[in-house]
Image (cartoon, rainbow, N blue to C red; front, side):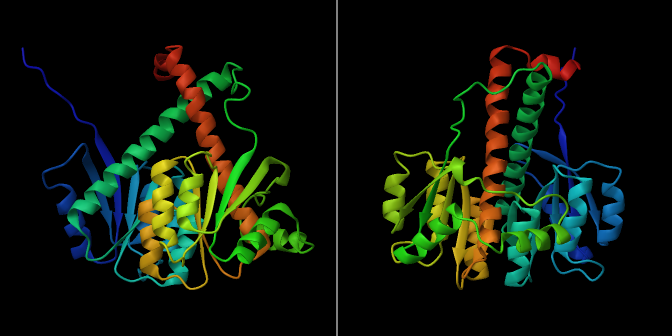
Length: 332
């Protein structure tokens, strides 16, 4: 009797208007060694055709170019999101402007930006990490929903009701200004909320100042020391600092506090620094200085809400596994 091992192939969508690029990425992903994952790949040179396909077929990861004639990468990913909200987004591009990169991070929450020409190992490893990230997130959500359907909720005290926020900036007056912005409302909030909701679906996220505690570190080394004793929900860092830049700091923070949401701020960062922050620290948002208070508070509120949901799902999933009810999810 022959035992056959079936390896699940993960569905990947590749979109680039240049056929040689599409073929090169496909060839690389289908070339051994595969690592932990093997792939079932669909490729498109027209983003509109790719969207039509995404309306009927689920994909785990999309790898998209930015500059395409029919529709740029930002517009494509924004259109893809409601069709495939759980599809992890990777941008592979040789050309993008700084403002577009910021918008892709803030509006579509891309997982990685890989410059062309790409490193084959980094492409494959990024794709494997994206699949693992999605798998864990979906499994936790399924297990958590099973308990919620039974009326079981998060135990009191399992997640701290107060979110600790750390602001890192070597200019103390700037850091204090950020703290004031996070803890005080502006008279212009109503106007900015209206503008936000006119251009975005759904209500703008709201930051509850009674549920946050904000602290300041005036240097990256001071911030890392503080992170040894406090589990910060969110770290907001300036980019330009003398001891190390904000991208490197947030990467160090991510190693120590992998559940912390990371937000980078700068007056004049560059694309390379922003890409490093995205790849190393998986930053949630990038904001330019001087900032708009409402936008800063909305970014922090959104980051905290996403973090809390992921942590609640993880806690409920752990409870579900402990109760050995994971099999029930698969049989329902």
